[in-house]
Structures are given as C-alpha cells and as structure tokens.
Amino acid sequence: MDKKHKKQRIGNYVRSSASDTVSYLAYIPSPLPPDPPLDMADLAPLLERAHIAIGRLDSMIDPLSDFSSALRTYFIRKEAVSSSQIEGTQSTLSDVLVYEAGDKKLNTPIEDAIETLRYVYAMEYGLKRIKDIPISLRLIREVHKKLMTDTRGQNKQPGEFRKSQNWIGGSKPSNADFVPPPPNHVMDGLDNLEKFLNDERTDLPVLVKAAITHVQFEIIHPFLDGNGRLGRLLIIFILCAEDILKQPVLGLSSYLKTNHKGYYNHLQSVQEKGDWEAWIEFFLTGVIETAEQAIETMQAIRTLFAADNDKISKRGRSAASVFKIHAHLEKYPMTTTRKIKEDTGLSLPTVLRGLETLKTLDIVKEPEVKSRNRVFIYKKYLSLLNEGTEPLPR
Image 1 (spheres, rainbow, N blue to C red):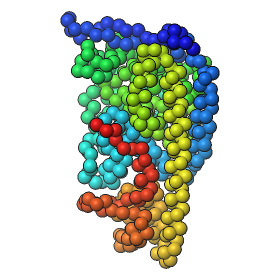
Image 2 (cartoon, one colour; image 1 turned 180 degrees about the horizontal axis):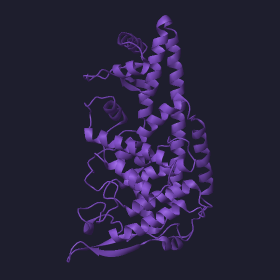
Image 3 (spheres, rainbow, N blue to C red; image 1 turned 90 degrees about the horizontal axis):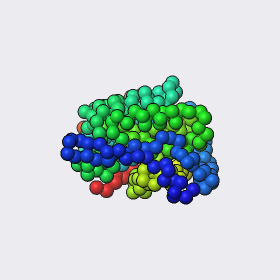
Image 4 (cartoon, rainbow, N blue to C red; image 1 turned 135 degrees about the vertical axis):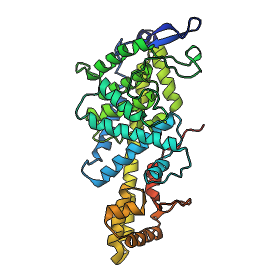
C-alpha cells in the first residue's frame, strides 16, 4: 500500500485551550479497524514465523509441572521489571526478588521495587479476571487500580479514566511532544477500542489485533498515569485470553525496552503517517525474538537443574535433604533460611548444613552485603533469569 492510502488512516487534530490565551493541538485517532484495511500480504510470512515461535514456546509449558509454575512466576517478574524500566524505574529482577525475600536494603530506590511489584499484582489479577469476563473497559479500570495503588501514582485517580488533559514531553500541552485526545473525546475512543477487541466479525489474526490494540490504547492515553505499562499488559491479556499462550511467558517488554527508539518511532509513525504495517512488522519481529530467547532460557535452565542435581546425587546420605533445598531454590532463586525451613519442613540446622553443601558445590552464594535476614542466591539460575533486565541508561 502506498503512502497516499496510508495517510487516509491518520486521525484528526483538534484545537483545545488550557486558558483564554494558551491553546494547543490534541490528537484524536481514527476509529478501528484501520481503514483502508491492512495490507497483510507482506506481513504473512512474518506472522507465520511468529505463530511457529509462540507454538514452540507454548509447547514447553506444562501448567501442572513445578518447573513451569516456577518459570511462570519469574517470567512475570521479568516482564514487570522490563516494562517498568521503560517508564524509568531502575530496579533489576534481583532487586525485586531481594525485596520479596524481606530485605529492604536495595541498590535502587525502594519505590521502584514496589512499583514493579504492583505490575506483577496487576498482571496476576488480570490473568484471573480474563477467565470470567472479556477484555473490556471494566477490566482495564480494575487492572489500572491494582497497578497504581500504593505507588507514586496513587494520587492520579487509579482505576478512573481521566477527566483532564494529559500530555507527553514538555512542561504543558502547548509545548508537549504529543497531546492525546481531550477528555471529552476519551470515551469515544475507548468505546471503539472495546468494540474492536470483542467484535467476532473482525478477522484479523490475534497477534495483529494485539499489536493494534496496544498502539491505539497508547494514543488515547486514557489515564493520568500508567498508560504505557497497562498498554503492554493488554498485549499479554489478549494473547492469553485467545489461547495463543497458556502461560504469560512471552516478555515482549524486554524487546521494546532494548529497541525503545524504534518502539517510539513506530508509535509516532502510526499517528503521523498511518503506517500500521511497519509497526506490526516491528511487533511481530519482537514476538519472534522474544519467544526464541525464552525457549533458549528455558532449555538452559533445564540443563542447569539437571547438572546441579547430578552434583547433589554424589553427596551420599546427605543428598535427600539437599535435594529438598535445591527443589525450593528452583521455585525461589533468592530466598532465606526461614523460607526454606517453612517450605521444606527441615530443621534449621539441617537447612544450614544443606546450604553449606550447596555453597561448596558452587550452586548457591550469599550476597556480599549482609542483612538481618540471611539471603541465599541460586546464582547461575538467577543469572539466566536476569538476562535482559538491565535498566535503561539515564
């Protein structure tokens, strides 16, 4: 499709005013689905590769296995870390796990860890809710409330669509990089988005629908804060609700963070050029790369667990209790003696002896900075999980 036809998809700018003397232009996106319709011919090969990659990833997940349950826990946290980092937080996966283990001595602001964990809680909540209700404005409001409560954005109307103008970049709408729809146009855009999501007559592939939904939500920017994170959560909810994924192990935010300049350029290109195809191509490429990376990580973790179990089996009579501790560490790669004792039923002396054995085998270590609670780290496992969770440079 040529540029001329794509430009027909561009929305409208309306002039609004913050006062009698200062006005600004706000953008109202065109309704969905895109019109003229998407040119799917060039996207078809990439779409097929994306479905194959997700299929391979999904086949590695057994919802009933302890291994898959543990991976679900940490892939959710990894996604939360990366998505939050796009918005400027500095917490790493290790910081979040340290905080969850009960240690408040972090290398980054504690507020960042709390904000990242709110993303985890919001995702878990949304994944439960989509089993009972469709992805809707009701669900979006509920998840937003979970996301923003007890965070730095808790005073920005959690769970409520905005009644005032927001903007991106700059100090006010008149000098902003982008101004979303005025508040009196927000509900029209959201109603159209909800219909698009749930219209069974829309024959677009689910991955394409997820890509489009994310951008349209970002353009509408319906909340005073948290729009980027919630927009990325919507991708996961759509893929899980439509059974493209059994578990939320496709952490696309890591790709979007690594390629953040391209990410923002494509969002802008949809607004200014109507180029949905270029965005969808970028999105599908991210799905493929992310799925393949997740597969590699899972395979590496399986290999690590098998090798470490082999080391433990050679310890003779003490192996039984050490195996129990190792099984705990597979679920909690950063943990405390108290947690191990509670989870395994072993006595504290047995736990301590087992941890010393695992330290000797170079499986666990303690952080250099000691805290009141003794923290132990399954270092090679955590290193595999940590890949791609480095904060963006400030």
